[in-house]
Image 1 (cartoon, protein in one colour):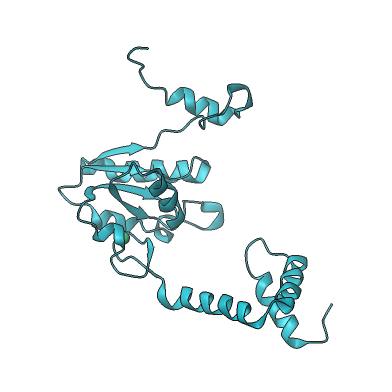
Image 2 (cartoon, protein in one colour):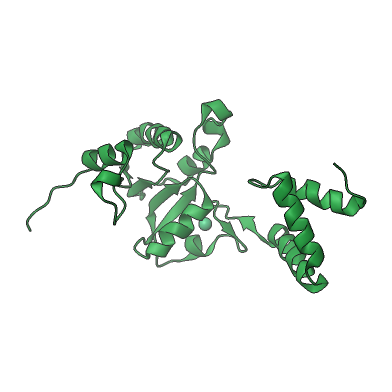
Length: 201
Ligand code: ZN
C-alpha cells in the first residue's frame, strides 16, 4: 500500500531497513514524527548525522570513539598487557559498568558463525594477533555464552595457545539472584563446570 505522499513512503522505507522495525512500526514512527515539532525532528536528524560524521573505530581496539586511540587505549593507568576480547563495542560498556576491570579491550566485530558466512577473516582476529606483544600477560575471552561465542572462544584459545600467553574465559553460570530451579540446563551445567574451590565458610 502506498501513501499519497512520496516523502512519507520514503521515510517508511528507510525505517523498515532498521533491525527490528517492521512496516507497521515504521508507519507508527513516521506518523509520530509528523506530529512532533519540527525542531525535535531536526535534533534527531542532526544526532544521526553526527553519529556518522564523528564516531569512528579505535585503530587499536576497534571500540567506537570520537578520538583515535579511544579513551581506554589512551589511558596510561590501565594495564595494556591484559586484553579482554569481546564481540561488540557495547559489550565494553557492560564490562566498564562493573568498574572492576583495569585492562584494555579488543572488539572482534561479531562471533564465528559459518552458517551466516562469518569466518575468522570476517572478524578482527588478525588485528588481535598483531597487538600481542612479548609483554602481553593475559587474554580474557569474553565472547557471549552461546554456540557462536563458544566456538569463537575455542578458536581463539587454539590460536593463541602456542604463543605462551595465559588465556582465560570469563566464568559462566548462574546470574546473581537466580534460583537453581529456574535456571536452564546450559546455564546450570556451565555453572557446575565452572565451579571454584571454596576455601572455608
Ligand atoms: Zn581503543
